[in-house]
Structures are given as C-alpha cells and as structure tokens.
Amino acid sequence: MGKKRHSAEEIVSKLRQVDVLTAQGRTVAEAIRQIGVTEVTYYRWRNEYGGLKSDQVKRMKELELENARLRRAVSDLTLEKLILKEAASGNW
Image (cartoon, rainbow, N blue to C red):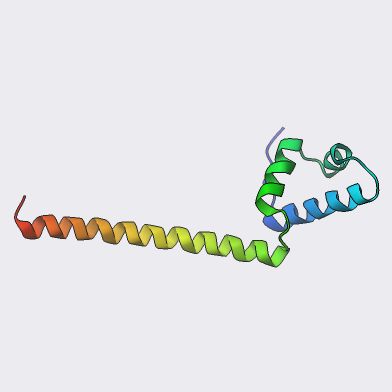
C-alpha cells in the first residue's frame, strides 16, 4: 500500500471531521478509523495542526519556507565572510 501525502488543508479538514464525529458520540478510535488514518498519524497531525484554520496553516507553511530560505542566505554569507577574513589575513 503506497503512502498518500495529504495537503495541510486536507489535514485540518480531517481533524475537524474527527472533532465532529466525537461530538456525535463516537469514540476517538472509531472517528480516526473513519477518516482513514492511523492513530499515530492522527496524534502527530493534532500536535502540529491542532487548533489551526486552513488560512493559518497556509501562512505557517509560507513562513517555514521563507525561514528556510533566509537561513540558507545567512549561512552562505557567513561562509563567504570567513573565507574573505582568512584570505585577508594572509593565511593561505
């Protein structure tokens, strides 16, 4: 059985679906089974996305991408600075 990658919006939707099903009187295990994921996956998703709305998840992902890009830029500049500092001091 192949893995399926869920989008952030799908994850939030499925978490909301579990909330609705448990409010209707079903157990958490039954609700999780009905949305088609394992308990481990459900709790991992709940830790990461619990309490967020679709637009907030989208914004969080955008910020994570921007943060990664900025980290790469800072590391590149730091490396260049160290190389120039070593070259300027004459330690070839």
